[in-house]
Length: 600
Image 1 (spheres, rainbow, N blue to C red):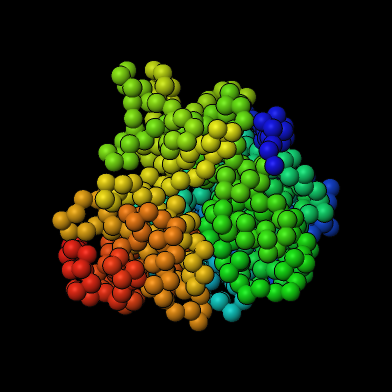
Image 2 (cartoon, helix red, strand yellow):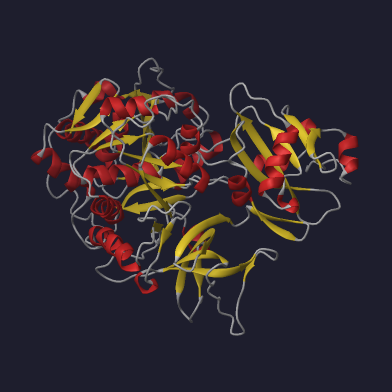
């Protein structure tokens, strides 16, 4: 079905109307939104966690207690406090409590330890830490090096061990008031003030702390709720970690804008997903990375289409998985998008067109552009005047967002990171004209003649082999119908005496499945040109995922096809026999490849 540009734009305008009502200068904050709801809907359930239900009023009162503890510790409006708690109500008490005191919350990855954890605390100049005891063991890896931070330990079921140097929060909470804080405490907190810091969940290096303002958080929720037509009858299902922008900003702000309830899950469970949806009458959820693939790979059930789920929002679902999902679970609206936690631009597929991340029907209404990128030389293509060249329809280019700083307008602002140097590295200047500035996404996209956009790859995830550019995403998508596989991770590995990188697949098989080299060869040969077929296959016990279900590749690339670096089964392509055979020096000799050279 063809959707007119005008119809697409009309839906996008709904989202824009909600998002742009918030400005950098406004005095209205996220804390004000929560306090309003606590007053107007005091008995409305906001959080459902296991057997516990938390109303707006109860949440507001708990948050006020956390506010007072933070202030009693010596923090002041404008300071930073850290929150390291898994998905449970205490996460909300902590970050909202900090916000109500005018304190920015640093949301810490609940898997962080050692250097990554100390970096997160120091990078944000956090003066206190609300620590879930489920993360106590991780905290002990930095306790001796991070000594000037007040640590409150939040008990969690059986995980009640209080780490050395931390103070149990329960006795302290009993001594402080649940009333709203005095008016005027937040008098200097405005729309552009940082609400919290979200650490980018990249697959390489130490993460950067992206700034999320009150204005942006409110705008995301008000925009999405307008677009999706959400009401207070809707029920959200939160299965992604709240310390990440997808859940902590997008889902929660959307639910709050709609006065809706959130079913809060500690961790995503593919086997429990549909039972939870039916039990709580869930209407809306969020996905990212490989979640949809996990769901379609579950054993089929006779009641697969009997549920209340109406819509899903997120990023990272392939066309093949999208179509399988709809065929199996019914006409659930899937709103695939593209963006990033810190991005000043983004697109959303409001037409639910499988495979696309969104459409820009009228380019003058968007600050996003694609510029040509030379993959072979790893650089942008420029004209004779030194300016970048916009990619045409059908061409691949890097997505850029024009940075706007217009008084009274939040759209197009790049809020950056706590690190000024990291912020500057994300900005390209003099792109199309002297003096302009653009946010650099690092993502390669393409668009078709109807201006639907498609994600291609991260820059650096595309490798070159046999003088051809190979997109890891495109190879993964092409092989996604290989039935025995739970997940397939594609990456390029260095090969001695060869230019570029050879393709390698790390495959996690479904329970009970065995790897059939001939079947995989036939699948790959039928879907890919010869140069793009993986030269090596590694059968991984479990895929290495980030906390937001994105596949890691860096360590796999370092290990390459060296059998001494891992215990997984390793296979080599045999094009003559049309199969993949167990790794051996003979198998390597047959394809004129030397053993992998481990890097020091």
